[in-house]
Image 1: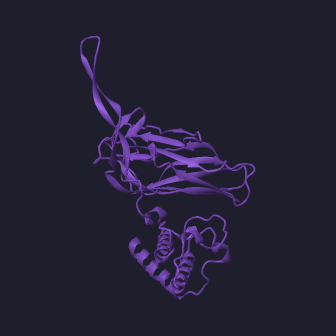
Image 2 (image 1 turned 135 degrees about the vertical axis):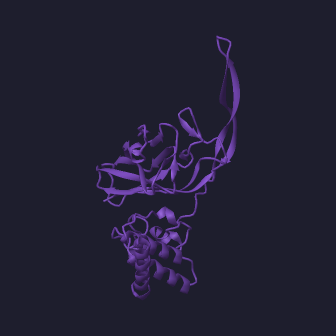
Image 3 (image 1 turned 135 degrees about the horizontal axis):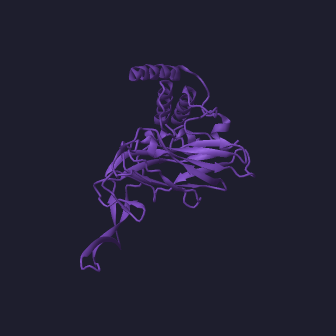
Length: 309
């Protein structure tokens, strides 16, 4: 039923898009512009058919002028982050808008290519035998100085940081969404922020959301140097995660001296962030992928921001 509604709405929206007449990017959008979330071309705080129309007309003009339209001319229009604004971006905005009309909660990361990070350097382990006082031998796997590049065994996962706004001195909450990760046994997530925005806390009830049979509360370190959130299921088994799950919320305080229009970007530390399914090992409190064909997700990233009103 929802699919039928979506197709009908898309058809209707496409008709409006093709027949409407409006200018392309406004002067404020084409040059200097205040921060807007992805797809919000006219800056009214919403993604609509008007935004798709603006992108389409701007692209048509660029074709007529025989010039590519760079993403820098209006970053929120480059929905797939390929560096140019074209018909694909107009289509993505229209699709996003249609999904919202039928009650879906689409994520822009669905329109992006996979991350350039295809694997991770993992330590090489060796077995060391220790003789115990009773004469028995204990074999332990310990990491060596060697590492090996292991590729991710799972793809299709997206991590999307939200956008929050507030006045100087305000506390704002920024959610972190995940999709394309149907099975999860644990994760470690790190986030960095630009400027002087102060990370005041991190909260998560991911164990309750996923229905862990033995609740295992996540742990976090709100130190701005880390911005870390770590969790694993109590039994180390896979749990089901729905698309759009909020794995955690980051609480920031906007600096007292911040000015309207200031933007503090929130970026995912892709080198240390890791999402795994059962089959990985826990080592020294960190999730470590030990099997190149098994368990870790390759993820596509979409950073967020705090915008000062």
